[in-house]
Amino acid sequence: MTTENDRPASVNRFVKKGLGGFFRPFLSVPALGALARFYHLKVQPAARVIKPLFGVTVMAGLTYKCQCRCTHCGTTPYGAAGRPELGEDETLALIRQAAALGAGGFYFFGGEPLLVPWLPGLVREARRLGLVTSLDTNGLLLDRRLAGVLRDAGLDRIGVSLDSADAAEHDRLRGRPGTFRAALDALRFCAEAGLDVSLSTYATKESLRDGGLDRLIALARGLGVKTRVLSSLRAGKWLERSDVPFGPEDIELLRSRLAPDVYWESLLLTSPKAKFVCGCSARTHFYVSPYGEVQPCCYVPLAFGDIRTEPLEKIVRRMWGSAMFGALDSATDCPMNSERFRETFGKVLSRPGPGPHPAELTSSPNDPAEWDAWAPDYGRDVDWVEEIHNHDLKELAAPDGRRVLDLGCGTGRRARAVFSGAARLAAVDSSHGMAAVARGVLKDLPQAEVLELDIEADELPAGPFDAAVAVSTMHHIGDAEAALAKVKERLAPGGVIVIVDALKGNPPLTALGYYREMLALHNPLRLALGFFRAFFLDTRVARHKAREVHLTYEEFRRRYAAALPGARTEVRHGIFGYLVWKKPA
Image 1 (cartoon, rainbow, N blue to C red):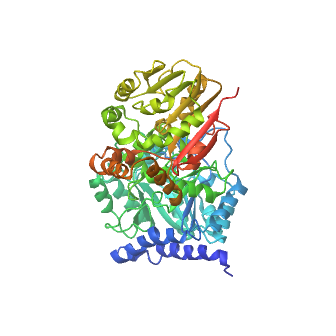
Image 2: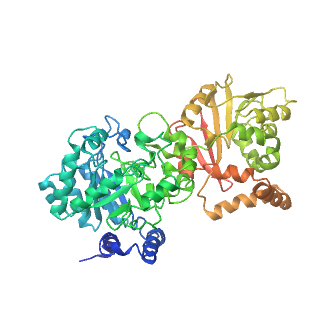
Image 3: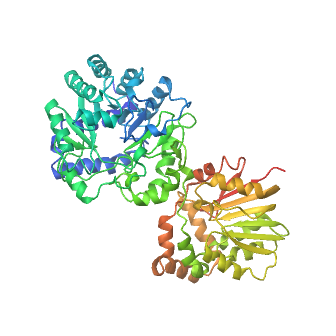
């Protein structure tokens, strides 16, 4: 009997199984392919108003353990010795949460998922709840008996990895002798058991041209199984390989191989005319690591929360509303292959130590040449807009008669307006052009010094200071925790740190408060002309804003939680996050 709560899963299962089965041969018809695409990209997101994960496939890494040492591995570099992986009960709870939230599929991943002894029970529970179940394996443990066990548990689809049609080459790439023979046997056992099985491989620029991919497709056809082709990604061990992403010619070569039994990552993409859709970017799937971290994809090492400490729904909503998804150009390529994405998140992706790294550690580009060129006009374009903070800074930093460190001082105009009564003012900026303007603005304040230095790389001026203020600065800092540790060293006991940054994801009515306040501060005509000039005539502001990363309020709070424990955070003026931390006396 189907209950009210089971209906989303039943609908999802019918559609997902239908697209992967009966309807699949017809998806090469442009109209039907477009309809399937419309369902995935428009209908499913609309249904999430009622069921937050409607139609989504949850990809779960059961373990980072693996018998192979692949040269191209995209996930196991993130395993860390000593960290406890999710157990059977925790994974069952994840499956139940996903089903209750309307998910359509559950994809078991690794490492090597067959190393997890309770896998059949997980498959059985996911199938019982109406989820379409999938699994990827290297095949080393998959014998005839286990193929039958997985079939009886209700596994819908299985992929067996093969990197080359040449046995010696495959074993070399996998770092283990015998993996080629084991993979072939696994494909046969799955086909004999009646499982929906695919030979899973990845295309490279070389294999598209030297016949390597064609030989794999022929091998799969000889075994009577489908071929799943993945694009090459700059992820895992290939993170710094700029030669990996495909160009237009490579993509056309890949498209030319697509057929009813050869699909491009998704079962929907079997036509040479099919448009690729990245499930991560399109929000049709996400990943939960073996440690419980929620990521956009197994290959995107940004963590948005831990299912051991927060509900799945809350984490996914935060992730999909985050700066990461605002930095994606489209859903037609993997974020890891996007130059814009890597420019935005490069500092986080390249952090030392095993990932994934907390997504809130991301930062905006900080190009000294951009600031240098902008310095002469920055007062006209931006300084007057930031006057909205002046009263708050006087209230929170109480600068008069105190020693103040202004981090990212820019042109010095804010420092002059707010900190002119300070006993000592150290204004620092990494831009030579900005520092030069600031020296001119502050030249008649004997207590002021302007220092050209990088907050992350250089030593800060000697303290102690009673207040350290950073307005529209910290989102440009790659390692905020390390930078703030240096600031805290310079702070006197009882001193305060004040951080102000623009936020994203603000409720519309709250954001309107900002414009009301701006109208109260500035002549409406000046305001209109200023915004028009900044965004339409001199487009530096617009270009800069397009490259900036702004956090949601929750991400803003989480970003500084470890470095500044006990800090008070709030939203002011509708769109700005304010943080105040007081050093213990």
